[in-house]
Length: 486
Image (cartoon, rainbow, N blue to C red; front, top):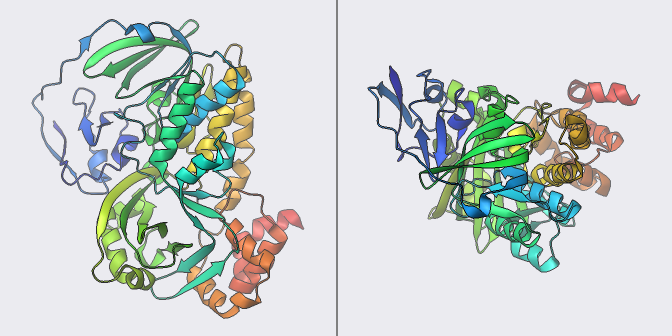
């Protein structure tokens, strides 16, 4: 039987293969993707959809599996926890904070696979001006986290561009690692425990809760918990093992790649660049000060493979072909860092609670369906998840219903956010160039709000769409919403 081999030199650790593997045979171990050959069935789906071409297949004759030594549970973990949260990213840490703020003296454990909190973050780390306000952060902590505040939005295609001035801060580029470190310390200050460099190997139900098998430094031990939270991202490790979620379909995953690189453009302008001409989704430029910017591209995994695209190669092409980027990076540009990541697309999951268990963040596909932005949703829904868990008596689905209801009341908003996927962005840019000075202040604001998780001013939005796209195209894109509001 042929089974996968990972070329670690080529692999960009986007983790798309981890998300789509139907038997959880691929896992991220520190900075590498590794294969559990005992679990692998040789289906080859990982190779078909590897966005970097890093997976090949060969005959398998029983590669040795590293021996795991069972040990007694460490003394500081040898108790039954009220809540175990698997995943120490933004969603997991926000859930812990939400619970500990709602109820003191909870025994909460966060399990994180990375060696240190915030290591190897894959997010482009751009989020809305109101996102950090949801967290218990001081002004000085926010100043540490926010690298650059944006007051202008740039829209561009291959050749043309236009800049909309918002006359105020609407979007920020943040230091994600710094945010995670600060949240980590707040969880500890509130009384929560965090175990890093630890992997969940098994989750089993028993009367009153869960028994969780944890691997750390090659040794296996058991912990128990009344409630469990899956905050593992596209891996969805816990919810898959509890039957709440199967592997992702390839149409449900997007992949992005980003350089941190030299940038000579206006530091207060964030750029959003649709890539329809490249059969991709979109590109972005987030300046972060010191003549640097995060420049990235993203697209659906299914589209990448259909057109035989390598996501990093597409990023390199973007630097050469997009006029506004070429102009602002110069011919002698330098690249400081590269990162890539997979993220959920399409729509939020509805199966986010079971008795004594819930999903939050990317694990539950809680990300903007247009842009893939997930930081706002990880924090907003994480805090609400923690509050519901803290107030729960038994962890029943009825107890967790406030969290589910809070999330799903926004499901309709997610669906309307996707309206406009087929928008003629070239026409929008062309008409903005001609009519930008004719737009009212409210129309400029609504143009930005089209991207934000806020209640839409549909009256202004439709009027603006008619100006930029015409009546026929507006009816085609937003007709369903117009009918609701007649």
